[in-house]
Amino acid sequence: MKLIDILSEGFDSSQWEAKGYELPKFDIQAVAKKTHDEPTWVHFGGGNIFRAFPASILNDALNTGKYDRGVIVAETFDYEVIDKAYTPYQNLSLAVSLCSNGTIEKKVIASVTESLKADPQFPDWQRLVEVFRAPSLQMISFTITEKGYTYNEADLARGLSPVFAMGKVCALLLERFNAGALPLTVQSMDNCSHNGDKVKAGVMAYAERWVADGLVPASFLAYLQDEQKITFPWSMIDKITPRPHSKVQEMLAQDGFEDNMFLETEKHTFTAPFVNAEEVQYLVIEDNYTNGRPPLDLGGALYTTRETVDQVETMKVTTCLNPLHTAMSIYGVMLGYMLISAEMADEDLRPFVQKIGYIEAMPVVTDPGVLNPYEFIGDVINKRLPNPFMPDAPQRISTDTSQKLPIRFGETIKKYVARGLDKSNLVLIPLTLAGYARFLKALDDNLEPFSPSSDPKLDELMAIVAPLEIGKPDQDWSPLKQLYSRADIFGTDLYEAGLGEQIEGMVKELYAGKGAVRATLHKYTQAR
Image (cartoon, rainbow, N blue to C red; front, side):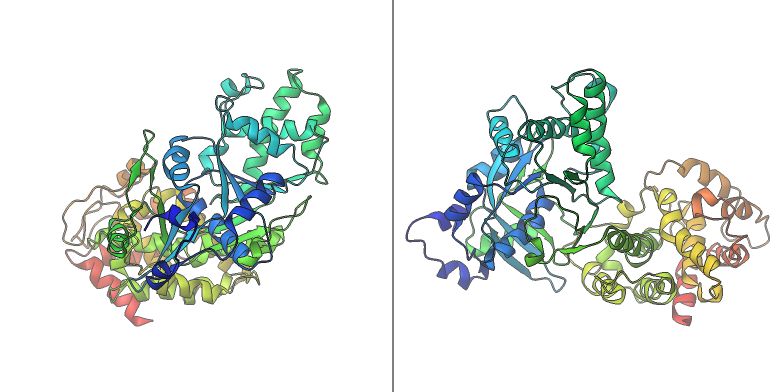
């Protein structure tokens, strides 16, 4: 069985369906024709997250029979992705959902109708110009990573022939302006806070420079700044899409699915005709469109206000997901774990993160309404963290911990203080922060050395705890005061917050000797 088999005349779907493959329920050729003639959506970034999520939920929307347009993908960085992962398969792909029970779900994605190389050196550019000049175009979107929104003086100085993605997008928006100042929404779907502002800053930088250099009229900049014409909504996206998994490849091969090979480009993009991703997903979008929008809500996207998008982002980053990851990474490394999923079977680590989420963080969560915080944490603990397909390691997640602590824990502590909440409720969050002082010794619970993950402040912070010795209760503990009064690391001076002495006491327990990390963790997690 091959992907393009489904486009063949006389195609027999029964053998695919018998093996659990969900096939498109819409007329693929009719949708492609309609999209070519009256395009509504262009997406920049043809990577795995796009195929596994935005393209997949559009596929679901098309399956309802209530919509008739697909998406045109444009790749701005690695053009081999088009040549290797799209063109040979006529833009079809297989989305594989990795379920926490160890099974997989398989869905053929046919919502991508064209795949283009977004650069003037390719003939595809003229097609993009044509699409951008189409009155029917409603939205352009992005999954190009946060780095993709950057620009520099050299590229700004290239004028109307930029190399960076934001410059190319600005050039295409100039085409839309020249076609009659047509309305459009510019929608980031990248996993970064206030993502709409990032794409807006990039586009505006080029437009302002081009106006200043006399390359375009000032009315072009005014067009981009007119929210009746152009909008840059925020969104919150959450779905883990790891590299193609060898276990998935084996399972597909056993099915007789032939398009199961791994592909690596010269730019080291790892892709395949299939894309595997966790089963849980969230896409919350600010509903601020000027020319209509594709009905992605038919596939599960949530449209709401900017304030609600921000609340969902805050809920995820400061209470319901990211803090649990960091707590697990600090202790997971010290306890010798190599996989987050394996940590979730640990009798101390599982209740550790459960209680941080449900008991300690929940009192400061603002319920955004569109997503229930308790259900969100439930998915994290029961489906996401234990997923055996997820290769995430505590060593990777502990990268840049000093940069993460002020947001992931400091915000919760500051809210406890500001709202006058009972800080005696905080036990395991202080234990997490106490664990960081032990982590900085770079010795695991068996007192064997490990290499901490990269962190811009690692050397500086390790130097603070360097005088402290493990297994020496009667020593000068004053370095802890130097560490835990650092608001730049913890988001607040923890002594002023009323937690410094409590954390110091926990650090002394963690420093007691070999096995003290496990003993201390067990003591506090089982006591609650």
